[in-house]
Image (tube, protein in one colour):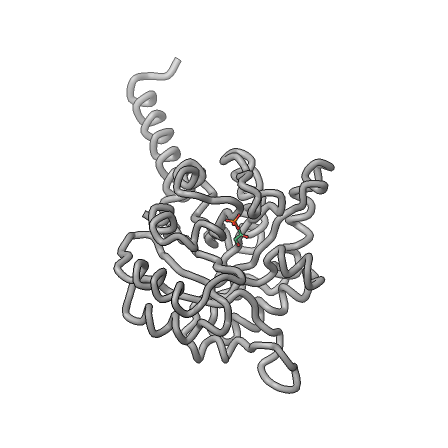
Length: 267
Ligand code: 13P
């Protein structure tokens, strides 16, 4: 039998352990919500959307990743606001005879804070390999632009019980960049079957993969990296996703094109 004083100190120990587990779970990572406009927009629609985003002031970090031709417009519209911006892809190279490519220093010239690398649409439509994605992340970091490394399994891979193995395979060359690099990037988990389908992963399904990503990051000394969820995120499902301990924000496609919806996700 425990005496009263050892019972008290035992309980205090339990409470402290619980509190520190809670605070290292979600609380000390800033929530980050990034809109991925994909290949949408034109000068006049963008102007209206950006004007609506300008006043955004939340404790959440908010950003938009836009098509290359609109970077100048976005930089001008969002300069001096709480909303940052970035691009959707980047070359592995700094400069040279690479027709059609855009380098990380060019993105930096336009004030980009972020760049998506390895989005599933680029992996599937442009044959981007896991190593190429890691090389793009390295190029972005070298220019001081934060890569948002996207990973995610297809429906067939999930149905075959391969979801976590696929994520590990996709992350491996990124983790090989080393702790100094990995601590400076962001990871986005976007199950391919949830992108643009209206079918969101349940918070529990997403959390299971996020926890596996967290463990892989922790193993290289980068356990505090922000891990975003993407795939049919809307204002109506964001709060339940964000209540999960390893979901630190969202990468939002369609809903980021509607200012009010996007701002409600980021609220
Ligand atoms: P949706 O939010 O339209 O499903 O797109 C998700 C996505 O691919 C963000 O990068």
